[in-house]
Image (cartoon, rainbow, N blue to C red):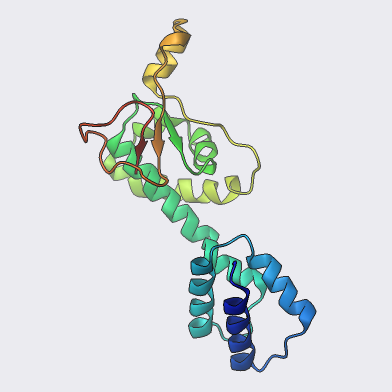
Length: 190
């Protein structure tokens, strides 16, 4: 949060609602916690907590409202993965904007294997994915991308110079469809 006056207004509002006295030290802890986030993210988090919290929120409560909890993040990661499976498929190599997805998919057998999933298996794969993702998101290191069939086969045959770029999944400015007509290798896809 960049706007200190707006931050102070929200802190005083929350303190009054919950009958809490704010010390300078306590206020500074909240300020430092929220510094890396935009004013909009923080306003939204404060708004949610004002209307839904039964107790004076701790800094972790604000962070959870900004980031979402682990279960929500796992569901969003699965939705992104499942959409990529349907739109991109196993032949392309992919790079997700959330690297924990790479580690999760690798533990499930890899990109090509996950893409073989049948429609009636999706709900079970989703449960497995979400369970693994909640653990993988805590890791510091993840693979940079996931190899598709073309990259795997070209690399196995020694055609390392003929490996296509990955399709980027997620992020700002991503394309809505793989076959939008203007897509080139290495562009984005949501």
